Image 1 (cartoon, one colour):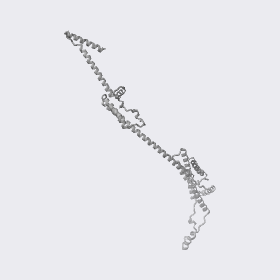
Image 2: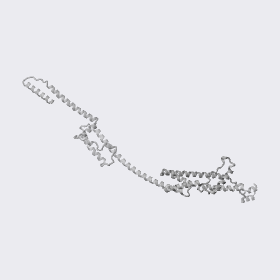
Image 3: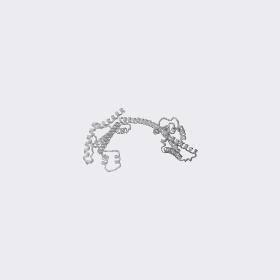
Image 4: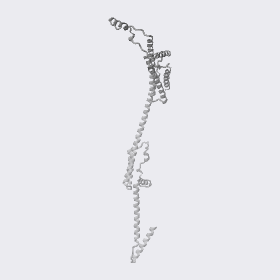
Length: 373
């Protein structure tokens, strides 16, 4: 409305000036200056608005290109579509790549993705600055490189998964073979304990090997350790008894052979050919005393008892009772002339029933364990 009124005023002023010119009057051009000034200011304001809009557009593209690109992508009738510049695979899925195989090789995918990208860059080169386009292109190429590296990592993970499964299968086979070997060793050692010819030393070694088997449960290991300690204790008892028997045997003194020869005592120190011949052909000895005979008999008896302890051959109860009485009487006489620190003590038990029961207990434990396994 204001433009129409101004135009009417101008037209009326022009008609008035033309009539004055026809009548020969002078015309003062005073009213045209405001119209020209109005027109010049209108053009200036229009130019200022255009420049301001271009400046805001460039500033927004410079400092917020993502927002500017999103505005263009949201326009439905935009002549230039930048959707092809963004890969179809979401960025969020880069950290967790899909396990499905790709339908096309990587070379074909890069070629097909680059064609619409180049076309879009050519179309947008007229409206977007080249630095922004180059930066966007570099970001797209870097994203493609990341996707390719993710695919390579996915293949490596699949290969590692296969290797781990193969390793687990191998470990299972080795474990099964190890269990089979340990079971055979267990049966062998248990049968070794039950052999009639096995003694305490072999029993102790067998239970020691059984207690070291890795496949045993806690209860089985405790049982094997208990039998090992029992066998070791009884073996120490037997060794201590044998040492005591040796000390008692040495207390029985033997007569010297030089004192038993009577011919040298009869003929003295004289020497002749006939005497030498007689001494070489004949021997005259003094008869042993009853005490010496008894001492030799006790030494021999104690020696046989000591050897029997090595193989768990225990002496007869009646014989052992008599031996104990004789040894006790001998030690009383022997210790009477010795100081208290050097006196011998008889540390052998009255019978061997306790150790025999422990040996049977060790064997019965092995028999029960063999039945359970």
